[in-house]
Length: 610
Image (cartoon, rainbow, N blue to C red; front, side, top):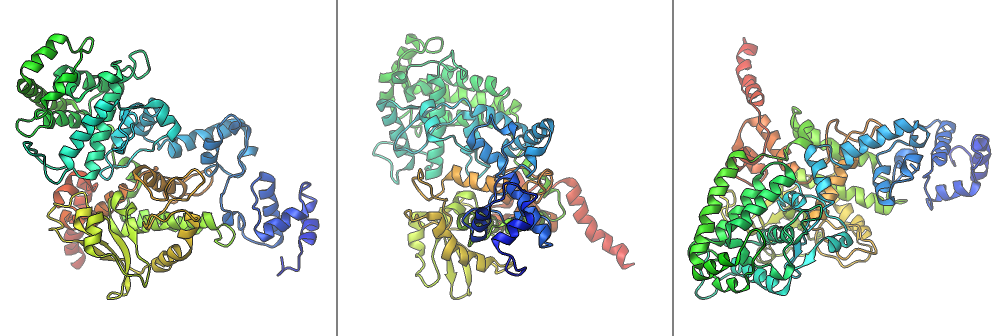
């Protein structure tokens, strides 16, 4: 305006004829940054200003903090406010002006490809989330979900995790464990996590924190299915909560009911049933099984109509070891049977196939971070939105450089320039890594003790820490320092600092600024929704065919990229801190045609030389 000799008054007069509702005060608020255009009429005013000043189309719109927040068409009137906010980003600016059928088609596409994730498994998961149930164990950490939701969520860093519902829904849909059952669970966790076992007990293997939380959730879901009413949509067993006991898990009939119940809900058997049966096998193993070493649990046994009779209970009390052995053999046989027919419900590569099939998967994935920078709002006018964009950018950049599991990434501590870094012993005790400035290398380095990794005993580490200096490429260092100096404080909003590099955007209802497994997954997935998935209706999104996904998929991208370039599973394993065998089994989509193409590059040089 100053460059063209305009004031708010003269600008209003110049374009006001085409916009009846244009107010001089509105222009003043926009110019000062006190307010931003949100309605369709306001966006039309911006377009007129762009034409007056001969600016590129959508010049101003690209600088708005929340594109498409203005969508309020008839099709959105019956949608809840929370869902409307989620949808708004993905709707075109002229959504309200389009025909009702076209609006319906756009909403259907957005829900199918962005909100629900676009895969058959995601749609099934969305249905399963409506039937949440479990037994909670206060003080032990895990809160139940539906078993189908948790089957993704519990995999933590081996697979993408699923979102959770709000706390109010969880409380209504789950029950708190009765005190006797809670004491039994606490005893099991203590037995499997203590440094030394109690006198007279033996065990085989120790659970880490993540494994313990996983088992709490799995067992809570089993008990939740047992207490759910047979007349409900869950169609559970209807056991009274006070009758729940770990002693029930020594009877084959209980396990058969559970695995068959799960098969009926999903339609086929999966690895979940196999993993649960293996829990039963471990609990009843001779000499080291926790159930076998705790025969006093049988005192709380009561009949379960249709599955467990009083005669079965009397037999178990007479021969507890024999009953445990019978379950041990039965569960092992069931595992072998289910393995023959188990199906994979979720293809972990499906959401990122568009990336993995590219000649350079990492270069393709990098387009998402470039899109974040392209759409990043003005920090001076929209500090929170800008801080969130920088955080999203750094999540992806650090993920692409480090290849860490999401737990190691989200728990990464920070040390500012000039501060004394934490010692290796302190980090080992905390089982966390740290991002810090290295005076020796004059660069930002990531230092993580080996015990912080899920596969700490892997030959990759050899009990030595992980250390990597981040490259100062494409403005990474200035972005890191801007985040630490300014953006991180904006996100915290004066809340208690958890000390981690990544922090949530604090709200009035927030309890902690630290990410957990689900919230970090959601932050990554939201980033891929907004900036990764190409939306033909808005023109935003970097990659056609991409679907929303979690942080674990970046490890697949890195492994596949190196495999396509080198054909070496060993080199691919270096990028994700694992072994070649694990890369071959779980990571990297290295198809026969990729292998043939790599070999052809070498063979074709003979002809090129001739």
